[in-house]
Length: 432
Image 1: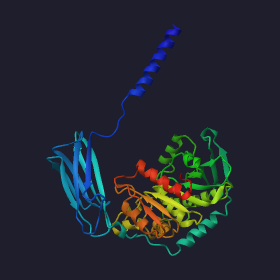
Image 2: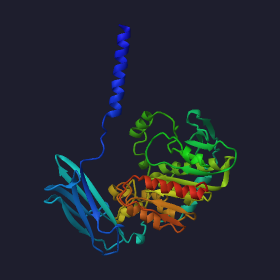
Image 3: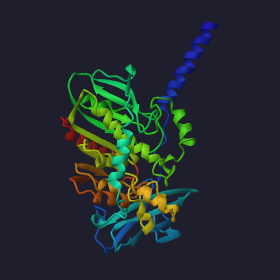
Image 4: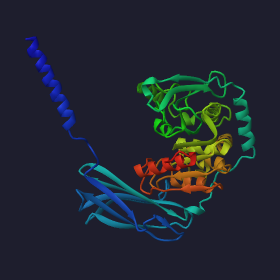
């Protein structure tokens, strides 16, 4: 009987494994909404007419008699809205124009079978002429010099713990930590170090918004660079996911809004200083060659990359993908500013809040940059409005490159990721 039970268990396990391997996966939707501008590069001159072709497809054929809602206008400020428009042939054309530099969006929602499907396209009108609304505080440089100097009065007290299970044949992987702006306040990260003796360039990876663990960048390290990927919240980065989920829903919920009117306790103060202390940590590693140091990240990480490049002369290059925290004051002038959209809902912020956040606006760090940078974003980004990112990019006077991937939102394509990495590797001198 025991033997019979054994074979029954084996049979059940085999069946479960087979089902897992052969079961279908959910992928995409049968109905898609396409919104196509009439310029291939999605760019227009001031006053030009843009024509959007809206097409609703089911199983790759136009869906007849479908009902749509649509809105047209400057990003986040649509000025044309229509509902319950029936498309007899499943397609229509909509037009728009702008007389001021900016980004213009056509967003469509199609209703079918009790479900709603969305599509959008965003075009640029003279984007190179977008001027930032952010004002540079008179004490901007002095503010940061003072804060960095105060932070460095706290010893780094750096600690490294080897993670054998994450090491590879070419790379040692460590969980590291070091003190930040005051005693007991620490920054945690994952350091990946080539095993071969020698001195190497370094790459600092700074994180997007949220609360999560990190795994480090062993791939870039295997090519011959020191890589450090940090978290910003002063907690270890190797705990189980449920710990971070509870923090994200609890004590760190909307941390980016903590104390926005206070220059000493605004949450991003310790974050920015933590990035500088991370560079301090890299700088004291005997394996670092002191010749090439890149900083990179996306969204919040894109913002922190620009901030680091604007503040620290040891940074030799940076790459920012859909950077957040750009041109907040644009909202006060009726134009889309950056995530987290401080003034979109709070339309009458206090003078203290405005003055404080100016010291953390990416535009003002961009104005201070002197090293080469690489930027990339999609016109359809609904988290970080392209208008805000363009304002920051236009504020950079140092050598810079912009590689748009037009259709992307707040994500990237494989080709975009490959180009991003190759640019950094070239600047670090490790590209084969």
